[in-house]
Image 1 (cartoon, helix red, strand yellow):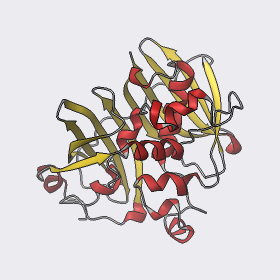
Image 2: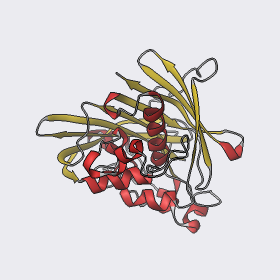
Image 3: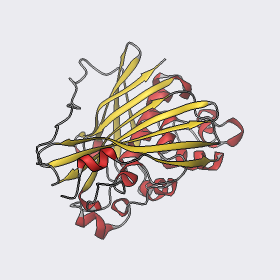
Length: 291
C-alpha cells in the first residue's frame, strides 16, 4: 500500500534550520496581492499597503509561516516522509491550520520540526496531517498543520478522524469584499517556494483533472487573511492567534474572490467563493481567532 500509516506515524521528526529575510516577506506579500487595495482604488504607495511591501515599515502577515524558509511547503514535504509513496497528481491540499505563538519577525532564523501527526482513512481517500513547528532562540513561533488529501488511497479500515465541517454562519455577513486574482498570480506566488507544476504547467494540470493550472490553495489562504486583517482587525497583524480553513474548491488565476466575514466573540468566521462561477465555494469552515 502506498501509505503505511503505522510507519508514517512512527517516523522520526525531521528537523532543520530555516531562515528568511525582509525580501522573502515582501515577495510573499506581493504574491498574495499586496500593493493594491481594491476597496480604496488606491495606488501601491498607499500607507496601508506599504506596511506589507516597504522594508522600513514592514510587518509580517502570519500566513507567511506557511512559506518561511522557502523550503517545500507542508504538502510537498509530507509526501517525502517515511511510509508515504503517492503520485503527486492524485494529491490535493485539503485544509490548513496555523497557530501563532508570537508575532513573526521580518527576518530571522528558526528551527523547524516536521512530522506526520495523523493519518485518516476517508474511504475513497487518505488524509495525512503534516505538522511543522518552528521556534527560534526566544521560543516557539508557530505550529502549522497541512491536511493532505490523497485520492484513491483510503479503504484500509483505519481511523476516519474528526469531521472538518462546521455549521455555517447565520445571518448576513458583517463585511463582504472582493479581491481580484491576477492572471499571473500563481506564477508570482510560486516563487515563495511551492513549485508544484499543478499551478503552472497546463499539461500537468490536465493529468490532475483540471482544464488549466489552478491557484495555490495557500495563496487564497493568504489573500483571505490579509482581507480580514485589513478590514476587521485594523490592519494589525499581531492580533491574529489562529487561522484555520478547509479548501472547498479551486481558484483559477484571473478570477475574483468574494470574501464574506461574520464577527463573533474573539473570532471572525469567513466564507470565500469564486464570483465568476456563481460563488462556487473556495474556502469553507474558515475561522480567524484574534485578540
